[in-house]
Length: 245
Image (tube, rainbow, N blue to C red; front, side, top):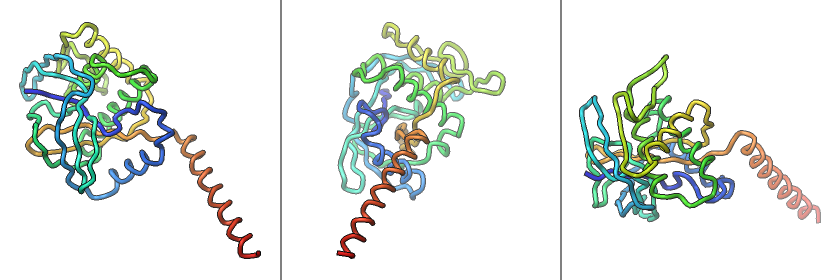
C-alpha cells in the first residue's frame, strides 16, 4: 500500500503576496460554491519519499508505507494543471489511474479544531523553511504530522495530544531525524499562526487528500483592498475628465 502527499498550492515557494488574488479567489470559491468533480491522477512523489511505519488503534491498522508530497495531474472541467497534496486517509488505497474527486470544506471534513491545526502546521513549516528548497525528509515529516493530526483521538486537558510515540496513532520513520522533525512541528502548534484555508479532496473508494490555499493576514488584505479602491478612484477620475473634455 502506498500513501502520499498533496496540494495545488499546499505551500508556495514564492512570496505569497504575488498570488494573493488568485489564492483568495480559489479559497472563496471552494468555501462557497457547490462542489464539482475533479479528476486526479497520481504521478509521483514530488521530492522523493521517506519510509514510515504507523499503527492506528481505532480502527486497527499497522502499515509500512512511503510518505511525502504527492504530485498529481489534475483535470478540472477540462482545464488541466498539476496538484501537490498530502494524504489524509490511511484506510484506503491510492490509485494510479484518474479518479474523480470532490473538493469539500476542511471544517466539514476534519472538524474545526483539526482543520485549524492543519493550517497551523503548514504555517509553521513556512516560517521554519523560509525560501529554501523542500526535501524528501521535510515532506515525509510533514506527512507524518498530517496523519497524526488527522487520526489522533487522545486528548489532554480538553485538547488533542499530538505525540507520534503514544496515543491512538503512532508513527516512526527510517529516515534519520524525520520523526523528530515531525514531532517538533507538532509540539509548536499551540503557538503557531494559521495562514491557510483548509479543504479536502474526497473520494468514496480511494484516498482523500489535503488541499490548502494561503490567505493574507487582515492588515495585508486591507492594503490590497485599499489599493484596488484607489485604482477604481483613479479610473473614475480619468473617465470624468474625458467626459468634460
